[in-house]
Length: 254
Ligand code: ADE
Image (tube, rainbow, N blue to C red; front, side, top):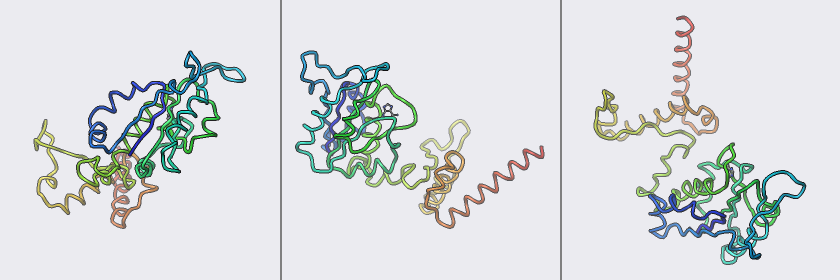
């Protein structure tokens, strides 16, 4: 997959994109990352990428022309329908599902905003989707772009060691993953659950699913509204609810 990033700060990508999984993906030719400094698409001698807002108000606005020129130049040899993604807190909130969808494309273009915003004509002319990483405002779109690239590249076949490992992730099917353990079997008096040490794969799988459900119930009950659960799993959830009710009743009695 080839990813083009339009940014005023390409050096911000140096650390995250040259370490660990992302570097491996690049090294294996699975991620072809092109960072473009928006200033290289300016045409004046001061390389002006921003200007004051029409209508007044504070802050500077990123000019449309350099960004549109940059995006058009990278799209020139990209397949029709290549997504052009604007990083903005006004976008739809990025998710596991969106990461999986984006991983299907041969090419992606990311636009990282800075300052108070971007001239809206960029959005009108070249953007196909606006994405946010959450309901808070960052100083720019570079970190959101890196977050999204990291999350989506895991879904490109060959990037993760064990094929299909992304399918076991938290959020893959609306349920969080259960706890993980490695050696030693006892650490500071805390033991690894017996079931994980016994080698019965079916039992391990059932235990993991139950633990994942328990965590989701305790930490992200909102996810359960959308999760697809078997009858057994729905029964388990009902037992968690009963357990909670019993704890509450005891607390109230005490
Ligand atoms: N730019 C500034 N804040 C952002 C956010 N939360 N998500 C995406 N882009 C942003």
